[in-house]
Length: 213
Image (cartoon, rainbow, N blue to C red; front, side):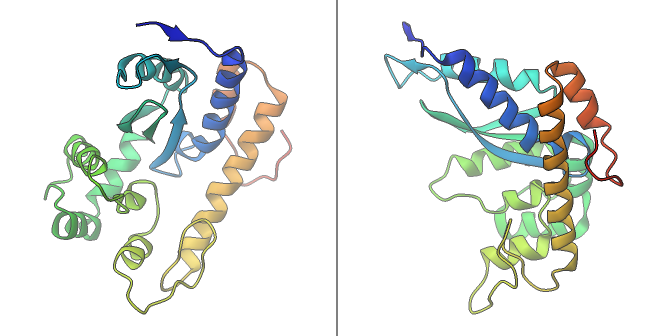
């Protein structure tokens, strides 16, 4: 099938890679189990119903990140991609309260098997409604995810980043950590051009220091 290449394809590719490096920094630094992102396609196809070529192009960029990822949903324009750290995400799903909630409220496997949960999540993304329980996968506290999904008259106590329900201390601390790592990753990308150097610097970020790279 014929591809229509955009004149700014390479510039788009670099900008997309920079965006992904920043938004997945907390996963790479291993303080966040996963990150869910929309990844736009650079190519436009003569036949939008053919998705294979777009996914191949997207995967070329995704593999450069050197992170595990799963494409949860795709169309001719973009893909919903979950980037994850296998160990941290497995630990998240092993939490008894998390496992029971996902199983009883959303039909996930009763076990904590990572592959089974990712497959179930992918199936949920194929449905008509957005599966908001994905917030658990990307490091939001269970109380906030459940509070958002099942809220009635209860109002969130905080709305920045994600909606916080109940005691805000843990949630706000996590928000601060995630944002701080993204900020530091942006500083790294301003200083270094080499991809491998950027990956190394982000992986080994010192979270106890202020930006001074």
